[in-house]
Every structure is written in C-alpha cells, then in structure tokens.
Length: 125
Image (cartoon, rainbow, N blue to C red; front, side, top):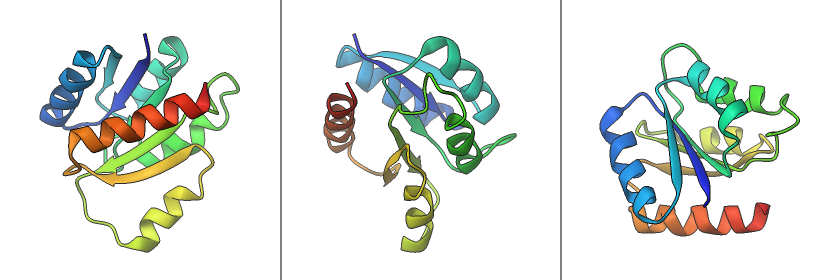
C-alpha cells in the first residue's frame, strides 16, 4: 500500500483529501504544521508528500529545504498545494527545490491530483 503524508493546517482540506486517497487504497498520515510534518516524515516514510505553503510554525519552503537534509527521505516527491494565490514566479521558486515536483492550487480537482500523485509515485519507485 502506498503511503501519503499531508502537511497542512486546514483541517477540512486534509480530511477531504485524506478520505479521497484512503478510498484509493493509500495509507494517509496527517500533520497540522511543518514541524509536525518533519517529525512524521522520518517515522512514517511516505511515498509522496502533499505540502501547504502558509502554515504556522514552519512554512512550506522551509519544510522542502529541511527534507533535503534527510538522506532517507530526500528523494520523496512533494506536491506543493496551496489555497493562496501565487504568481508564476512563486511557483518557479518552489520548483527549484529538487523534491518539489508539482505546484497546484487547492481548488484542483481531486481526480487530477490523483493522476499527478500516481505518476510521481510510479516514477519514484
């Protein structure tokens, strides 16, 4: 079973995405902020991470950069998914991080997100 970590401070979003991917036979772990996400990534060892940008404590870019220092999970693909509008330059900034594979809006259809997740997981295995 594939494992997904969702790091986001929006409970409704996390619950909706978690239920959707659980129905697709993913094991899903949730983290409410960047610090908790960094702790869980080391024990849970996900196959993919969905990461919000704006969170209390530690933001998305800091999480992305910290993940690069963890040898055992530095290659885990990350989809940055945000409810905040960012221009093209912002998404390009995040895509410069080696583990950031996609930059999507939270309004993205779940079926589209699922296709992106499946393709990235398949590519990384």
